[in-house]
Image 1 (cartoon, rainbow, N blue to C red):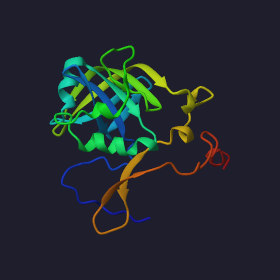
Image 2: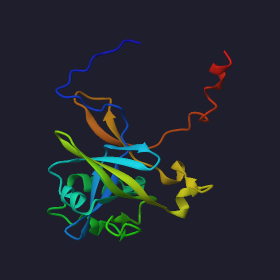
Image 3: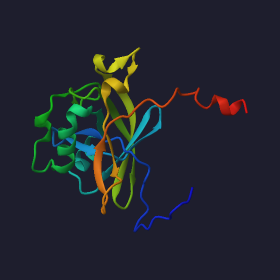
Length: 195
């Protein structure tokens, strides 16, 4: 397999697809939601989110030191995209959702999302383009109809992914859906252990 060195002006994370989520933050005492694709699990109890310095939600993150992760299913695609292109400075993005609060009381969550995670900010990293907020998980909420055997079921959640589309002259970023099951974890590679 041949490799091509990518010409880039800056180092970027090119491991696709991203799993975009709706991050909930109270700003000036009101709920606001922002679409974030740069999230990551640092362990089972820590999540990072990268938020651009110019984003409206930065003030609420710094003030309250809490946020929520809301995982949308495909039925919320239009609202997911809207929260990424509209600014909370000029739009009441919370108006398109039913908001609820949990344990932390200042991390607004979206009832229509099958999975909601409340986080308490424990550290902030300042990067040239983003602030990275490290959040300790305080509580997880899940819709009953999104679970199987007490765990989130991806076929029921129907998560949305974000990645470039391969066709065309200029890259176009699009939303993708979940594909087919490929194999059983902790089993499909066992035949290589026997060789």
